[in-house]
Length: 99
Image 1 (cartoon, helix red, strand yellow):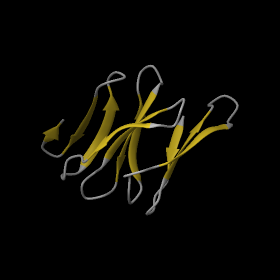
Image 2 (cartoon, rainbow, N blue to C red):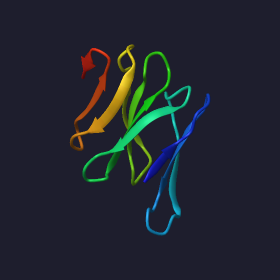
Image 3 (spheres, rainbow, N blue to C red):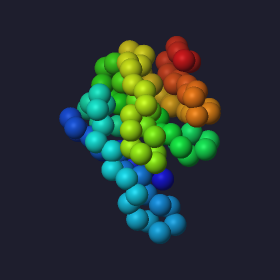
Image 4 (cartoon, helix red, strand yellow):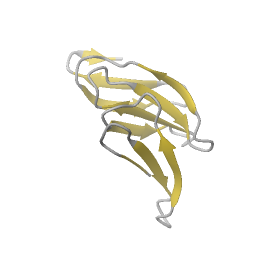
């Protein structure tokens, strides 16, 4: 499982859901104003993150290495949901958008 922080330099923490021990802490590069939503890929290999900024910045991290594998700006409209469909595909949904 994963949790994300709010604030100007947020981190994301990944925990083992059974033992409740912290597995990783990611210091996020390009994610500002806090984590709005996150989702694991179906394989669990990647974690997609969208932030609370006006640009709704997006990033995808490798959950084994902690490496950021992709990042960019999202939609300027409100993002209501982020969902990983596969290891290489995710969608965001919001007011008048599905990307």
